[in-house]
Each structure stands twice: as C-alpha cells, then as structure tokens.
Length: 500
Image (tube, rainbow, N blue to C red; front, side):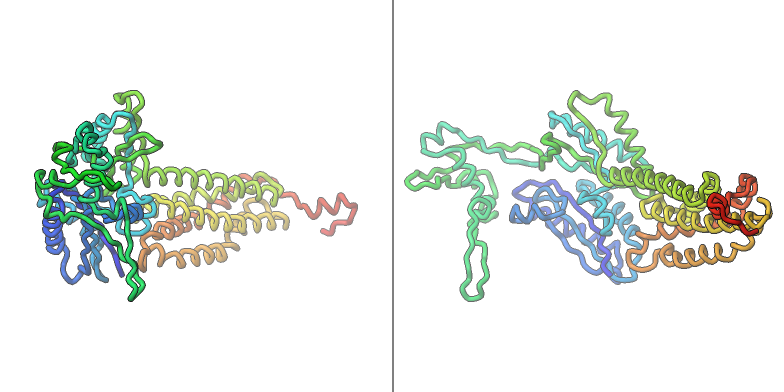
C-alpha cells in the first residue's frame, strides 16, 4: 500500500548557485525526514528539484515549483504505518524550526483531496486581482499574515514571490545596430548559451541501430559561467550568415535586480494567490474565518482591485448548496407523489413527520464520531431519509387499512405500530448492519466513505423509533376522519352493489 506524504520546499538562492545550494538544502531536509520517520515505516524518498528541461514537461507537471531553488519531496510509507497526518504535523514543526529561512508546505496525500483541490496545493486559494502588481502583492502578504494567525491555519504562503534574484541585460541598441545585430539576436544567443538550443531550435538524432530518437542540444556548461565577467564574454551572433560576432560586453551591461518569480493571470488581469490549509478543524469553519478577514480588507482596496475566495472551499460551498436544494426538492416531490397515491394531503404529511428524527440522528452520529459535515455525509442523509420514508409509508398504509375495517384512529395507530414493528426493525437493522464496515472506514481509502455510513446509521437509529412511536401518535391526533375508500366510491358512482 502506497501512502505518499508530499512536501514542497522552496529555497531562495542565487541563480548561479541555485542547483548546488538547493541540493544541499534538500539533502539536509531529507536527513531530517529520516530522523522523524522510523526506518521500518519509511519506504522511499524522491526529490524533484528545480524545473523540467522542456516547457512541455513543465506544462504537464502538477508540481508547485517556480524556479531552480524550488522543489518537492515525495515520501512513501510502508504498510502498517502510523497515520500519515501524524508524520505531517511532526515534520511541519521540526522543519520550520530547523530551516527557518525556507518555506515548507504539505500537499494533500490522498487522491480524493488532490482531485477536489483541482491541482492546487491547498484547499484555500485567495486571489488578489488588480492592475497594480506591487499593491496586489502587499495585500496578499497582509492577508497571508492575518490568515496565519487563525486557529488551525497551516502552510500559509504566497504563490508569486516578488524577490527572485534576476540578472537584467540592458542592450545598447545603437551599438548593436552599428554591429549589424538586434536585441533579438542578443536574447537568442543568451538563451541558447544559458538554457540550451533545445528551447529555440530543438533537434533530434535518430540512432539507426535501435531506432530511438535522441534530443541534441548545445549549451554552455554552468561551471563556465560562474561570474558576470564570464557571462559578458558570451559571443553574440545572428542567424543569417555574414554578420559579425560580438561579445556581450560590447553590446550590453548587466544589472542585479529582483523580479516576480512567476506571473499568473485570471481573466487577463494579473493575480496573486494566497494558499492556506486547515489542520485539526473543519474546512467550513476555517473558510468562515478567512471570509471575515476578506470582508475586513475589502473596504480599503483600491478601485479595480478584488479579492476572491476560490479552491476546494468554493466547490464545497456550491456542492452543499446544491445538495441541500436537491434534498428539499426531493422531499417536496415525494410529498406530491404520495399525495397523488393516497388521494390526501394529510397522509403524506404524517409520513414525513419521521424525517426530523432521521436528520437529528444523522447530526448526532456525526457529532459523536467527530465527523465533519461533507458531501458523503449529505448523501448518507438522503439514503436515511429514503428508508425512513419507506417505513413510514408501510405503517400509515396499514393504519388506513385498519380504519377501513371499522377501527378508530387510536386503535388503528396502535395496531399498525404493533403489527409493522418487525418489518420496520428488520429493514432498518439490515441497513445498519450493512453500513457498519463502511462507517468504521475499513480497507484502503475507507475513511473517505465513512461519513456516508455513519450518517445512514445515525439517521436510522433515530428514524426507526420515530416511525414506530411518533408517527402513530401523529396519526391518532391528525387522522380523525377515516380515509376515503376509493373502491367503494367508484362502485357507487358506477351503480354497482357494494358488499359489506
């Protein structure tokens, strides 16, 4: 069984030293991971440092790495290991204390949470959108600091850092024009020298012996460009023949600056993302606290700047809203169908009086088992409501038959409750026993569907006595008049003789 705990490490180092420095930092982090996780439970550790060589590989990657100083650590545990979340919390504390200059955040370890996050590294995504990139980052940094102080807030970070070390090449266009070169020639020559010709002029070589294509690229070794002086000796050429060759030092000057490490856009406008995750508290309560911070910040925003809460929490809220509306419409539809079937508005209402018991039982079971309200729990509530409604229909139908035999409302209700006790209990008990393994979360990934089983069990534990005791009471109070015998009425209208 593979249970990955994903850790993404970001280190801000100089580009010339990025690979070596990042490798040293990740080796130290890996050593700390081995100290925190026992060897008998640790399977493999995989480090992905820097960016892929090709833009195609980067486009199809889900890694949150932005530059050569970023990377992620994938940890796989063996079977019969301790809970992954316990190791995550332990590593979150130890890594932050031993590597204070680095930024760590943990991605979802299970496939379900990864899908619900839609590729994001955290369930909370605050997007600050506006025309002023510098102001957007200041607002995002303020939101990050305030969210980090919330109870249960972990892995709070800004997706787009603005202090990435950068080398700015200032091309003197007059000198370049006098040499028969353009600024485009300077950019292409530097790109080929520093990141290989595979980016601008990919070339493939077919091996005739095995029929395999190999990529052929030309690049200046990194150890040959350790300083600005070495970089300024880069030859600048043009693609067309007959043009002179110049050194970069004769055409441009170099300058150290800082720039955004990555630029993101949402609906054309620039955006800065603030990621956050809750720990040991439900996502809904954490989202409410985040929303209060957003509402407090919005009045001070400049015109054209907006803050939107997206991510898994947005999907959760829309899913809950739709499930709630679906449950309400289902109850109304069932009520109307029963009204047509019973030819009465009162009998369906008596049947539906068992539903509050089912909802109360579902909420009680979730509270006792410390299970948060989720989409599987809502689905379990719908299943419990269906079984409770079916049992109530069985009881009320039998009571109406007893009324046709000449009994009053109280006698019919008592007879229905006593006679239908066995089938109602058998139906509910079979459902409860069948849901016990799911409620216990047995098997791989069983905890994902455990809320569904717990909601069904809790709903039926309360709905069954409600059906057997409360529904007959409501029937004896409300059904004073005997239900209409449709067969006798049809026979009378047809002029037929009705047998007593």
